[in-house]
Image 1 (cartoon, one colour):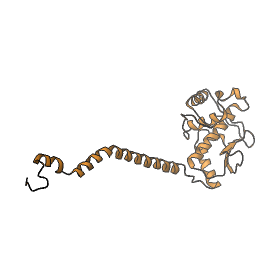
Image 2 (cartoon, rainbow, N blue to C red; image 1 turned 180 degrees about the vertical axis):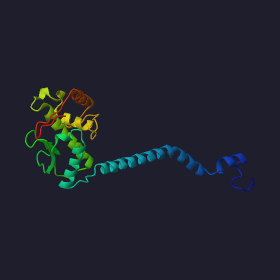
Image 3 (cartoon, helix red, strand yellow; image 1 turned 90 degrees about the vertical axis):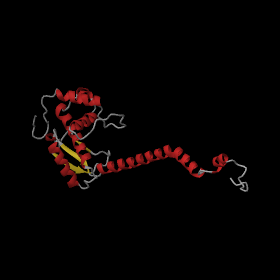
Image 4 (cartoon, rainbow, N blue to C red; image 1 turned 90 degrees about the horizontal axis):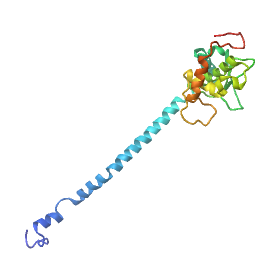
Length: 214
């Protein structure tokens, strides 16, 4: 190295050690290595957020209320009645506003028995099918036990659990696997009771209209 150079006091090895190379690029590389896991984690979070949004969108599409007037609701309800195992227990589906209590539907254990009343509100077709199967479960209850006391019917299940499990068996509802904060539930043990009771039923006779047994 030239003795007139301002760096003359450094040996060739010292000069290379202190001044050669690209320390900026080296620092940039080290910083990238440190942050790579964080960037990967951020990518996973973004994917999870996107997946969550898609789940919400799919759920909204599945639950889209496409039945908006009484005629459409009644037609869909009658279709489900005709398809259901216990549909023969219902003679009609009627649509009307049910202000109180705020429920989706009901049947009456008296004239005009065998009629399912559905609340006049926008309905998703699959949710309406589930409701119809639920109400048919109530009619099945009445048809089997008629005026039997609470301790003598449904294998000890309450009325709503019986109707919900009936909807499960008919394919429009899923079994509840967690804790459901509502009276409308069908847990695995309740489904077992329902199926056990129904296995012992030889004949079901409706007690209204033209009496029929199957």
